[in-house]
Image 1 (cartoon, one colour):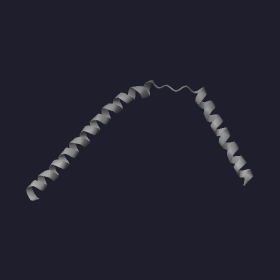
Image 2 (tube, helix red, strand yellow):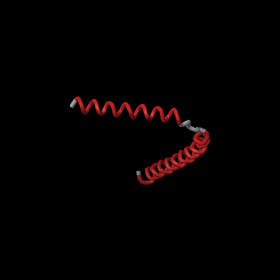
Image 3 (spheres, helix red, strand yellow):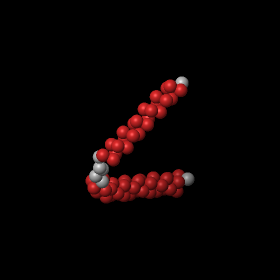
Length: 70
């Protein structure tokens, strides 16, 4: 069991080291990601507005039904 744990530990350590060196070697360009946040914000506002409209319609229908039949 100790041999297996030792092997797993060594493998995990080498993967972490290789991921760290890869991250240090490859610079990440965030210009495109930052530009897309504006589009994402616009989409979230649109979807949120549609959800609010659907909620108002559902509650209005429920109230109307309660007034007529309740």
